[in-house]
Structures are given as C-alpha cells and as structure tokens.
Length: 382
Image: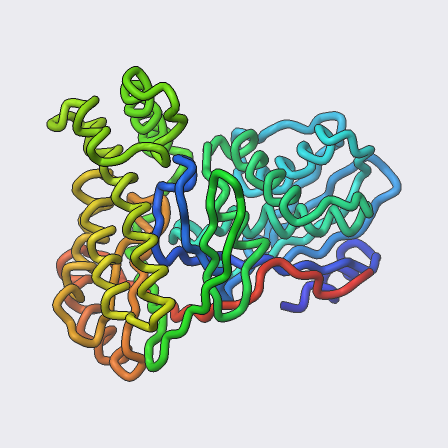
C-alpha cells in the first residue's frame, strides 16, 4: 500500500511505514479473557500506518479510507466520544505516556483493508501498527510483547472494550502458513503449521456489523467471573475458568442457569482447541472441522453470541462434503463465519449461497479468501 507519496504531499516529510495484519482464529473463541487457549493466525489483510515526528506538541492524523483529518494537542489527550477511529491511535499514545516516555507530536496516515466489524480484528491491527511505528519513531526499545500489552490496554481504556490479548498478539506475532497456540495465562506460545492441502480459508461476511463495545461482550465476561467466584467457594485454588473442570461446574453451579451454560462453553472450548491442535498436527482436517462445528453450536446455544445470519451460514455448509468445518468467528453478534473449503468448490458454493442468503436475510453476502501471513513489520524507514 503506497502511503509514502500521499504522506509527502500532506506533511512534507519522509515517513516511516509499518504494516500490521488482521487475524483469523481457527478455534478458541471467548477463551482469552478467561486465561484459556486460542489458535489465531495473521492474514493477508492489514492496517498500514505512515508516521513522522513533529517539532511541536500536535498529533495530526489522516484516515485515508475515510478521508478524515483529526488533530489534537498532546496536553489534551483523552478518549473521544464523537469519533471512534482516532481512539485506537490516541489510546496507544496514552500507553507510551503511562510508560514514562516523553512523547512528542507526530503526523500519521492510516489506511486499512481489514474489513471493519467483520470479526477480523481491524482495531487490533491499527493499534499494533501504531505501537510498532511509534516505538520505531521514538526509539523507545519496547519488545513485541510489551507493544502487544500496550495495544491491548489502548483498546481497554480508549475504545472501552475489555478484550483479551489474542487479537493484538496474533497481529504482532503472526507467522506465514502457521497458527499460534497461545496460552493466555502465561503468554507462552507454540507455532503450529497450518497445512491445508487443496483447501482455502473462506470467510463469509454476514454484513451484520458487530460492536464489541456494546454491553453484551462485557456482560459475558462478568458472567464468567461470576461462575468462577461460585466455584472458588469450594475450590479456593481456582483463579479462572482455565482451572475448572466440567465436573466442578456441575457440582458448584445450578446446571439449568445461564451462568452454568456460559462457563460450560468456555471449559469445553479449551478441550476442543487441544483436539484441533492434535488434528492439525497429524493432518486430519476432517476431525478439526467437526470440532469447529461444535464450537459454533456452543457459541450459539450456550454462550449466546451468535445471530440468525451466522447460524444460517453455518447450517448451509454443515452437511457439505467439500467443507471440512465452519463456525462463527470473532466476538459475535455479526461479522464472519470461517470455513475450510475445497478450493475448487468455492465458486460453486458462493453461487449457491449468495442468492439464498439474500432472499432469507435481506442482506448481501460478502466473502474473503484469506491466506496466512507474517505479523507486524516495518516496511520502510524514514
């Protein structure tokens, strides 16, 4: 993405350019903030930022895709209520300030081809690109994990979403043709080759925009914490759902309660993720795919974060022998399904799904074919 010529035109300066990707998550949804495991991978859609230093205390931003300018004095740094996209950048600046860095003014152009609201972590891509770029610009010497944590806190404090660490981690640490099995408690991770011979990752976009800042996402987190507190009365060593077995849940919670169903989903999802890792390691896509379908059912029925459009798309491919697996992906309430589909079957599948989806749901069906790429990287020095 050629941001440098535009940058020179707007700011009369030579920029430093950084690319940071969106992500897919093969399995392990809503487990990250419960100290569980996730299995994300960086994709070939990314946010790009170009930056240069200023000699004053001004932050000047330009969102190329929206054709919107924004500026703010460093002394006025705070979250915005009326305009959302600058918050992902300003939140990162606030993290550098909190870390004791003497931040200075800068110019920044943002452009991204990560679809917004599709569950591909467009916000994390912007945060990681910004954090990496400012780290380079100011030569502050933070390592990638420190930058991941800063980007996550920017989401918490400026976007108002108490997200786990998966999105920012996948964006920063992604490895081409691999997924990352991340332990969200220890932050230790293992790269697992994602071999998909004859298959592609097809993302089907419901065009239902989700907003993780809505109350539902944070409500799920509270429900999980409520379940942990009840189990802890009998098992003081428990710190999170990561420490809890299904039998412990059944002993300590009312099995007909909403809290039980929310917690059961997370406990079972960690088990499914380990199953998928084992399946991928031995090249058994069919087994991995069946676990993905089970995850979707858990997210829909137990965790309550699906929507009619997502359920419809998964049900349409559930018995298709050319589709190894499918599920809703991301925080929920909209966005994409992730599908493992035989490559030659994709045109026919889309031709079949598009008219029936439009007729039943009254929306156009979007799609993306994702390849697995490297994480955040410096494209050019100023």
